[in-house]
Image (cartoon, rainbow over all chains, first blue to last red; front, side, top):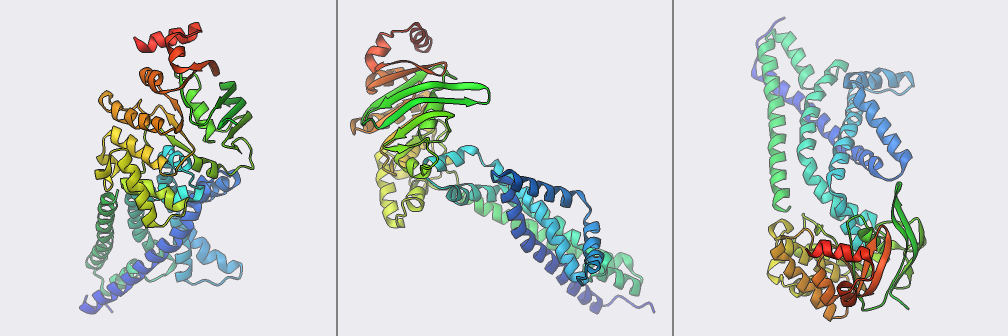
Length: 216
Length: 243
């Protein structure tokens, strides 16, 4: 039965958009924590740690996210680990995000002049104190723009989880478009929803940059 | 016992030998100007003293602590040996006051109030009491360098190392920084400075050490050595920098 596109359908899309946001937030938090570990492993002066981090980054960045989704969704059950679409999606996106965050943050940490490390050292600050009080605050400011840029990418990447049947904004649009046969309107609405999420992020980034700049 | 005792140190970067068997002592209260052409190893020598560079062989003892021993807590040593760099290296994300208080709070474990008092006194000492709330990029090079000196002095070091601290400054700003150094000299601070300011070396330093090709080539009382160099290398260096 083909039916009309009504206000209920818009509510349905918005509810599905919540899952898009939830997935992005989970990937951001879990990927962020893991990404910090990756970044630190990448810069510490201990070669095996660097190799592990580099290998991890290469594998994750060098394979398609869709492939990673399939591996978790179809692969884990082969090992007796039952995962639903939600868990597989959260896992794949978090791991994907961690590699990208790791690289962005490593770059930001390394773009702070080595002289800043030396100045901290000359005052008797320990390695950890130099990292947290001198280098990190400067690296954070540098990393805001690329981090938020990647976050927008991440929001849009969540649409791939539709392919393993997770009902987020894109999957909901597919369902709705099949029911109403109004693909242009439905996908148009979905595009607007994605835009609103991403635009809010870019505004947030501007605010953050302004604030950290005011505080140097 | 000398404050700094350097015995036969050797340092190379890859295949380049920067310091070849350098030995040197510095007494407490002494002001030693280290001069020489670029690449002669003078900055490296200074950086070895607080362990920013590791030597391949030889021994450095500062204030009873053996810098070259792996057992030494190098951070504890650096608390006692202040260092100021050519490029100031202030922390750009912190105000002048917080640049000075950071190590006091983190390393000395002072409370905020006590640290702030020290910062105020030190920044006033270098003549910048009105700049406590300013960020480094709001200051001139000379002012930044004076803050860097205050930041280092706040740790109450036993000695200070100055690595070409006026070389990056516009000529009209050099004087204000040298004035701070003169004041420190009057107060009896032990200082080693790598410098190209020959007049300053002649008038303020007690001793001049001339580095040449990774060795201490000439070492003697500042005035005599600079007015009547004994070696042709120092003579040619001096005529090159003074004319």
